[in-house]
Length: 422
Ligand code: UD1
Image (cartoon, rainbow, N blue to C red):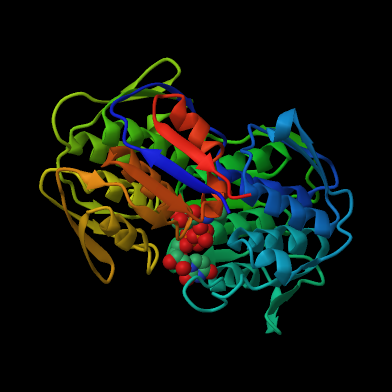
C-alpha cells in the first residue's frame, strides 16, 4: 500500500495547475444516461472516483472512451442495457446514487443499491427518493436496493427540499429534464457543480432556469441530444493548494483558479493574514510576513465555507497565533483528522460538531493515518509545516480526489514523495 512522505522544507514558489472538479465530473458523467447521443466531457480529472463511475456506467451499458490520457471522456449510452446499479460498485462511492434520476427519467425504471454501510444512517438518500416521488415515481426499498418505477414516465412537480443537498438537487435536476411539464426545485443547492451540470444539460437541449439560485425551474423536453462540455475547475483542489503557501510560506499561483468559486474561503484566508490576488491565469496566494492569525470557521452550503475544506483549514490553524473554533454543520463525525493532527503536536479539542484549535509554534512530523479523502490531504498540508518527516499511510483515500498530489507539490519546492511497498 502506498504512503506519502512529506518533510517540512520552507517557503514554496511556482505554479500549480488546477484540474477539473471531481464532484462536477461525477454528476456530469451520469447525464449521459439521459440521451442516446454521445456526451463528451473535456477537462476531466484523472482520479479513482472517476474510474469507479466509469465502471458503474459501463455496467449499465454505456460505452466510455478515454482520450488525451483520460482528460477527455467520450460517453455513449445509445441504450441502457441494464437498469440495476449493483451493490459491489455503489458501495465504493456514494455518488453512484446519481444514476437513479437519469435512468428513471429516460426509461421509467431503475434499481439502485443503497450506498454502502450508511443506508439510512449517517448519510441517507431520503431526499433523492422524495424528489423522484414528487415527480410521480413509485419507490420501494427492498433487500438493500431502491426499486423505482414511473410507468408512464416522470411528471413535472414541485420538489421542495427541507434542507440543502447537493446530490439530491443534481438527481432531481437531471430527472426533471425529461419529465412531462414543469418542475420547480425549491431550496436547491447553489454549488458551482450544480451550475456546471445545468450548463451541460442545456447544451444537450434541456430547458432550465435559475441554476445557482435556490429555485430552479425545468421545463421537460421529449429528448436530449449530444454535447461537448468542459468540466468546471475543482474549487476544493484549488482551496487545498491555496493552503500550501499559506502553511509553508512563499507564493504560489493556482492556474485556472477563480475567486467566485471560493469567495467565503478567500475571506477567511484574508482574515488569517494570507493574501490572495487575481492574476491573468488564476489566483496567487502569498504568506510573506509573520504568523497566521486564528480565525473562526463555520461550514455551510455554497456560497458559505465548504465542508470539503474544513480539514485542510484546520491544518493551517494548528500553527496560527491564538484560538480558532471550527464548526462543522454539514456532516457529523467529520473531525477524524483531529486525532491525527494531535499526533503531530496540534492542540485540538473536539466537542460534538465543533473543534477548538489552539495554535502551536511548530508541528512535528509523525506517522499518521488517512481516514478519508479531505482528512488525508490535510495531513499532507500539516506535514509541509512540520519539523521532520511525516508519513501519511492509507493514501488510497487521497487518490480518490487528488491527481498527482506529490508531483504538483514537488513542482513548487515541497519535499514530498510517494513510497510504494510493492
Ligand atoms: C456532495 C459532495 C461532497 C460534499 C457535500 C457537501 C459530491 C460527489 N460530493 O455530497 O464532497 O462534502 O456535497 O458539500 O458531489 N442528506 C440527507 N439525505 C439525503 C441527502 C443528504 O440527510 O438524501 C444529508 C447528508 O447526510 C448531509 C447533508 O444532507 O448531512 C448534505 O449532504 P449532500 O449535500 O447531499 O452531500 P452529497 O451530495 O452526498
